[in-house]
Length: 143
Image: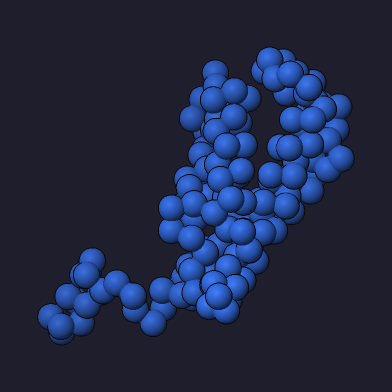
């Protein structure tokens, strides 16, 4: 029994056979929920989004509203596919950082929580990459 417990509790079991499954499930879930729960409704950008971006002091608020919507939708789709993962995730990180500090800056933590979860999830993929079960990995294997 102690061998079983040490296997479950050990932090040294890196690169197990389930790592690719776990990483892929996380990447696909985060990407698709970002794209379809948050990004799709911002394309084309509604006037409320444009006004909100304008109130943050951004120049050319319509342009930046498109940038935010595309970062969330296209960035989420690319993240789910594992295609251009690091740049796509970086755009999501920046967009969520603006949401946390600008849009929800004065709000309680509960209002910032979702943007923080997406921001740190995307930051993970900026730092780690998409993993072996991704389009990025297939492309890099061919080169």
